[in-house]
Length: 484
Image (tube, rainbow, N blue to C red; front, side, top):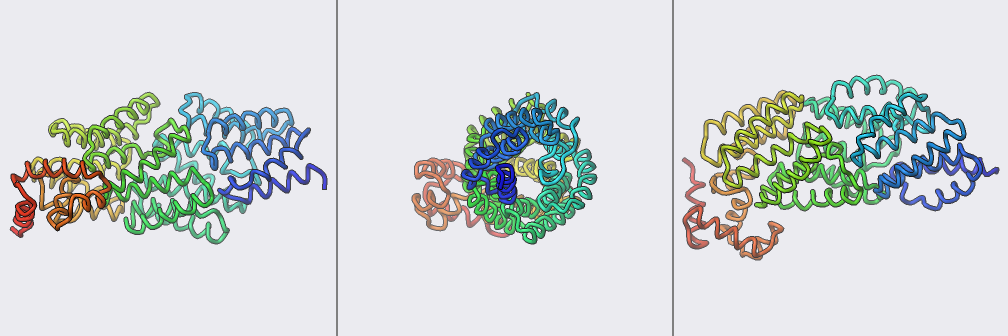
């Protein structure tokens, strides 16, 4: 066969690999060699190199540079579709890297002819415009664009394109507080993945997020772990971060603060390695800050929230700022500034309402209830819980509604919360373990902290409960657990 035919054959292999581009270095090398002297084919290879650098290598800078080379070669060869796609990759990487010029590059791409199969709608500027609208919380705009794209991609027969549109639809519906619709789209995407033999990592991630919103935290955790395993096997750095984020959120919601910190730290490390600068793309920062507060590290949480908040404000990411302010409210409460915490959480709940993000509003009301309960203001705490339950009920957010209906407000079991209402979540968990006979070393292992941390927390627990020994602590907890 001619070199051009060999290039096209190798491009077909690359396109069929799904998320597993990291295993095709040799294929890329031969394709580049055979494409020499043909700008259009060189552009096609460089474009796929750009996708690989982002997806498998986690390097948006190299991806952006490869896309720039692809664009120049496409222009030289008169291939406007490839040129539009190259500009799209540059815009996508620019958004990741926090480049304010990314929107102008996207606009330039949108002005060129729309792409067709086999390059795919999922790599087109029209689809990236949807993703940017989602990142900006312009949910109505994103949804209307997707409803135009859905029949178009179904007509092409491209399973990858249909999956991407279904994924974005699920994410838009979930963020807009339509959990039932999100679950339906996630199921459709999973069924399509199985039927068409697509890479499973993205589908498991999507199933995890949909379950965490409107299904079951336990199922969400199981799906997230499957997504983590699949993405690691395919060396997919992008969806590895997403599945880890989904798992960390579930761990935070179910009171496993130490595990949530460890999981979300992995997301932090992956995003740092990938040079992700825009916090609106994967919003793990507020969750990690909240987990740090629950793990008795409010000062570290405050530093994280303040650092990321500065970036989010500069980029105009209002939804991210509000999520960070929820974490800052919990930090203020943990540092003894309850009045300031309540005021910040109340205003943050109002901002989420104005942004049209009901699940985030409900989570903020849950946080407000925890703060009010810790300062023993039962009526305001109950009012916040009732408001959260109403928000979650309207959204079909079943697991969150169950948290709002629990007197403990998502802070663990009844024994934990009732045993020590004046304790932080981390202190309550330690007090329960110690009262059940755990040694300092055993408690440290179960809570994923050092023995020194356990000793420091025990000292504070003894002071708060006015006890001097483990036996007195067990007695105090038993009295607090006794029915009224």
